[in-house]
Image 1: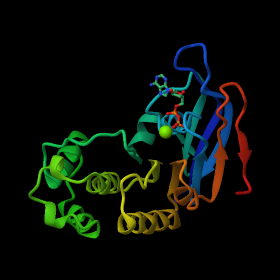
Image 2: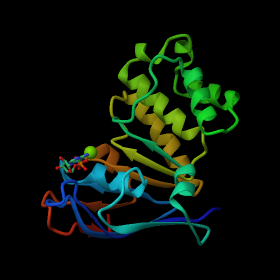
Image 3: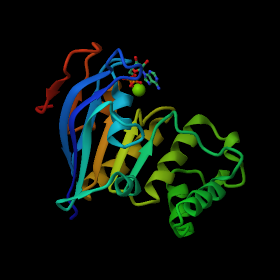
Length: 221
Ligand code: ADP
Ligand code: MG
């Protein structure tokens, strides 16, 4: 089974050069973990998950990702990760399969139509294959975001508020997939303020609202 680790070293982040959202934060996450970033609104959860996934850069400090003991570059990390968040938008004028095909074309990878149909069936979207995504409910859009991320067979999954807009059945499906992913040696990071999402986590860090305090690391949770 592959071994992946994600190391954050002395991460600080300021958006305006004056106030610090994150201050001198260090942590290490290993494959097989579901790592939770917890804390109140505005405490920097989304900022930290975006830094860990290389969507934004820290003001100070660095991220190191290793795969089977070898350090991999940010570009390679991005290729082996999936990111799911309410603020990531879909190309809503397309139908689901068209959207999936386009994303695979952009990444110059072979479009796995059979796998896509299997996931669409699992997430009960098969009856909506003829609709453009703009006609989907918000929960259906969230389901499609999971499919898009999982189709690339990522090794790392970043989730910002993953249950957003999902109904009970959607939540159960996502939980099943995440636990399977973890058992297969995947690394999961969840940023959340929600008890049910947090209950999936095997370890957590709680960020403070304060812009200067260091976060409390709680490896026992
Ligand atoms: P959380 O996800 O915990 O609610 P965020 O990471 O979204 O927190 O935000 C933490 C702080 O950083 C907030 O004060 C927010 O206003 C600020 N912030 C987040 N994104 C930006 C941005 N792109 N530009 C300026 N400030 C930002
Ligand atoms: Mg957030």
